[in-house]
Length: 264
Length: 264
Image (cartoon, rainbow over all chains, first blue to last red):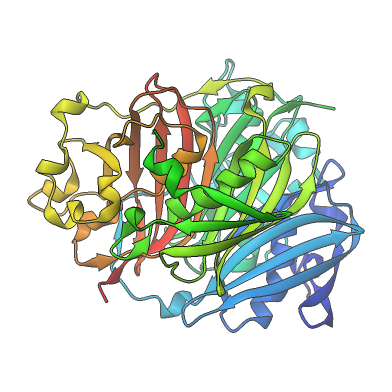
């Protein structure tokens, strides 16, 4: 069986550092492909190609909306080092749509002290959280929500009767049973639904820049995620995300700068 | 009077999108220029040149150590839009040392909802915090600490008698009285001393990638800052920073991925 994520992020090598991508309609948010899915599509070919396997940090700038369909991926190895390889990548559909910088390394070779003071969110078991059937229709009508089995904590702010802090937590996994790996973490790191949608659904939330740090290889099973926005100022806001695997290990952190705009 | 920061970040235009920089020894951390200072040096010429004044988000990859002395700054406008202009910049000293992606916009033109749930750290007044004379010598012997007047909260983790959470807060300003502006925020966003130094001073903390979001123009006066690391795993760690101005307005957020290594 070929899982949906693998099919949607497959790439055909067309030359040295160049690939042809096929952006899949299944990962859209209202006719625009999700940013995390685009980053996953750009990073996955590099993971197979580079001398270092793990994309430790990726910063993507969203220049213009990307369309479903064919796209060219152009990459440049900026520096190859003993510990890290830095790469630049561009997604092009006639014009450039996304540009990113990434540093690859090898998580298995990391060697140094460990001290952890954060922890995953406290959540009821997945079957006691809110699944598709219990979420507002403006959320479940988004294409990408069919790919991601999402179980939100019962205190999801959309369900509050008055404005709540824009923070959400819950369980996520790919709906077709594909286990999480590093490439798929990028999809979970730029989640539907943005926490700021708690302020009102009739909004459009374009991402200016998304940075993801990959911190560990996830084990199979559910991921626990928490997303929060603390500073929404004149529409601009950060969204910070933390992702843990089924064993409670932090596997990724994400931060994006985005805008909250009236729907157009 | 020409302030030290302005002299140390001045640039000579040598062509379209090209500048000559002079990396100043005063902003070193043990013979290597501070990463935030390098980013400030690369961004300041662009702030004067581009059609949008404010670097809203900057992600810098540190490829190789930079040296004091002459450097070339090469920039490329990736996309000019109505709201944002995206730029790439490289600092070169024979080989490329730093590459960054930045999105410029206009904070004064931002228009959208505001909802703030974070707040600045509670701090005693600056004269009741720890200044140079009260900090350990391994901190005050670093060159850049002469440029930045730093007053740390009395609970600074270096002063704890047993290992404490790697988090610090305090007041900062440029020592020669130059008021803070957006360009100088990059220096305060990659601070000496890294919070993880609380785990032991005999360490070297190279930054892999630093992202700074500029959220507001600071008013004159002290800045309040808080830096924290929650996930140190096998030496890799994030350091998150928040910077507020004298009126309690959040002016910047920063996050870096760095390594904690035995001193070499």
